[in-house]
Image 1 (cartoon, rainbow, N blue to C red):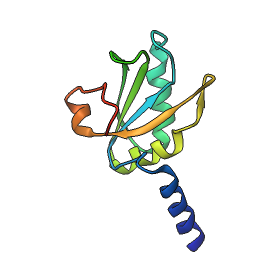
Image 2: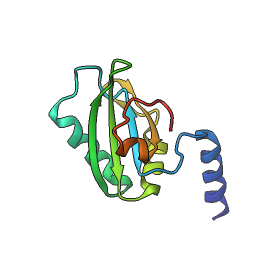
Image 3: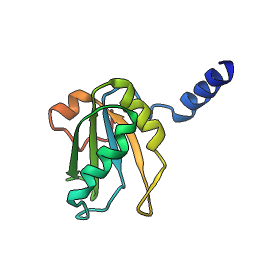
Image 4: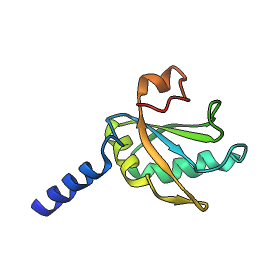
Length: 117
């Protein structure tokens, strides 16, 4: 058990503020601008369901920076943090994914362009 705790501590220190508590996860760099298709949402839902129950997946074409953000709203706060930790830096279709948790209030008000929590 001590080994698991120290592993968790190192992981928490390494990720910094990647995963502040939130039920909302943001994924960037999955696809480029204009490349999102109907399957993307379902692929993301399937992948993220391993971290917990997914309530909603929103694919958003950014207005400020060219690109696509995929928002995943989980049932539980812990799921968003676990997913951010696991998915940040992974590769998807030849692209390195950026993942972090997103402020639920911003998400609920439709503020999808913010670069901060």
